[in-house]
Image (cartoon, rainbow, N blue to C red):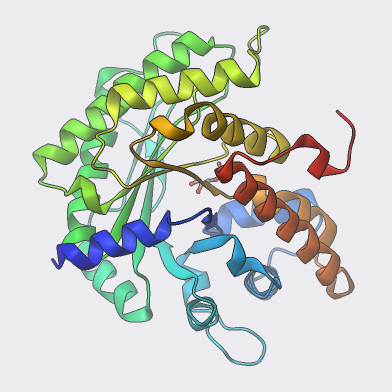
Length: 342
Ligand code: 13P
């Protein structure tokens, strides 16, 4: 492992005010999102959609790295340029999702463990040859009656740490994604507790597996109440809860924290990231950035609808979202940027 190069890549991914674009939906997830909008669920439709994303004019002003999926990393633009090359030519670092999905955890009804360690060393070497410089693995933690269990948190944290160690061995920066889900009626305090428990376990396992914290990016959930919780706190309260939770658990050696959006509306995701950067700007040991999928892509997808004629308008919507998130990194996002009075 060349630790200096890994650290440089990790720092580049969170440098300045840019963030990450997650476009690594598995075929199943991508098809589900297409099906809801009656877009054909074909390889060509998925390719055309990803071409729309990577050819969005101005994308690289706000995006430092893009996370691809196994199918996408092998796909090309209509002119024959591989997506990986198109991104790299723009100065956007290509990354790759390497987990193979979350499956039911035996003996733990309602809980899942993320799989994909078998053969991972070989797959990482292959992806590195294809041009990937970083990787992603997502663990999901469900909240509910008696959930999560310690067994679920431990199993997921252990797998994340084994993945991260293999990534660093292969010269890829691991994005360590641990997502406490927003599904349910749990309170903000409960999400804080579970996020803290999870992140403490993740960093303990990373340490046990000798992962260099200087050469990884953490991708956590924001600390939020469940969707169905009757009390929804203010943006400022959520910003404070999230950053205070991260202060407790994330070593200062980690160069950056890039949030997932988790199903929040695009506007709320920007607003909440902005509030964290406004309120804590001078007191953060790590960059606070974004690695959104839905909160960046969804408006564009709903405009595109599989129609060539809508590509340019969809790209404008995508560009708008990445610019809003870039502003949020600087603490300069304003609701007025959305053009809708709030
Ligand atoms: P969302 O921003 O849609 O939560 O997706 C982020 C991600 O990469 C999930 O693995």
